[in-house]
Amino acid sequence: MGKSPNPRRYERDEAVASAKLLKTSPQKLNLVAKMIRGMPVGRADSALQFSKRRIANDVRKVLLSAIANAENNHQLDVDLLVVKEAYVGKAMTLKRYRPRARGRMGKIFKHFSRLTIVLKQKDYSGDISPMEAARLAGDMAVVSPEEQAEIDAAAIDAAADAPEADNDAAADTATEGKE
Image (cartoon, rainbow, N blue to C red):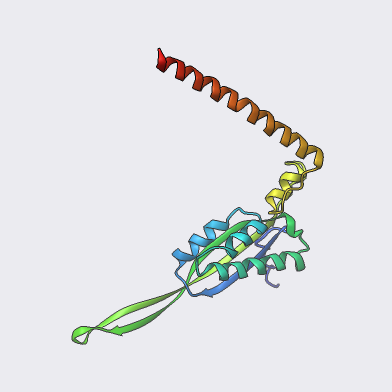
């Protein structure tokens, strides 16, 4: 009579990575984690790479580890991965003391945090167009020459219509002021 096996905590199309001791407070780490929640991994990586927060580099390392886990351990398509969860927990706190006036001691708390990132493979098959899937994956949307010509023609038509309306309105206001 043995123990029953632990149930899998994550679905088959999910990959996880975590960091146990990040030298920052959970509140500061949560600001960066909140920034990437729900993003496609390409956009999340870019956002972390150009973030000015010091801890963003460590969060990026965990994200890249989760991407590698998804690709190598679970055989998931990297282009379809989305940050499903990015949650922060409290880890240990180092207590240090600083001498103060009159023989007293001031407490200094050095907070540590833990971070877990869960990636999920999003299935875009019937929901949206392939161009929208590429945009969500963080790739540049590829537009065919025919579609680009239609977009350019629509922009030219809109630009041609807009000045006429503005000129008519300007002419009306100019004549009203003279009377």
